Length: 229
Image (cartoon, rainbow, N blue to C red):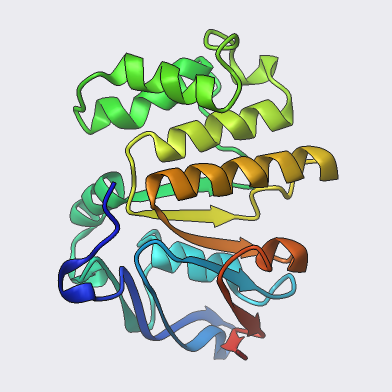
């Protein structure tokens, strides 16, 4: 998939993003003045200790939460200028997700989990593309298995196949190896970077793992909700 954006603008633009929530007598600041851009095809790591605001930031980048201030643009579109349905449409069209907890639907087989976003997008060749992706992640023999019949590493491979199935412009990954042992996590990360390069996707990866962050082309660091580098 081409990675160019019109006029070579960044695929992701974050400007003065902030998030506050009510807490007793005074608001609690979770994020403040976050600003960065990510070029099409770039891999960016968001690093920081637990509680630094990394997952909150990722939720805002996806439009799953609303900020107290600032803006996020994906492919030039201000996502907070959209209503909830329009943001959901944009996510379906342009954004893929990989979560620490896999987030597979337990009542669906591996194949059905991968097919789901393609069916929702009314894509063509849904089954064929889904089978090919599961074969790509080494699960061609596990198509009809349910999540409970798969190991954690296998579930995350299904999640990767599902995330890449719609060929998203932007992939958001939240601690994708957090529930896996070191060896399994390393193989998952290798696979994610391989597939990311194959599709030319823009990757934003939240992690506390400095070695994993080092595999990205660039990183930003959060501490107590503020951007420190």
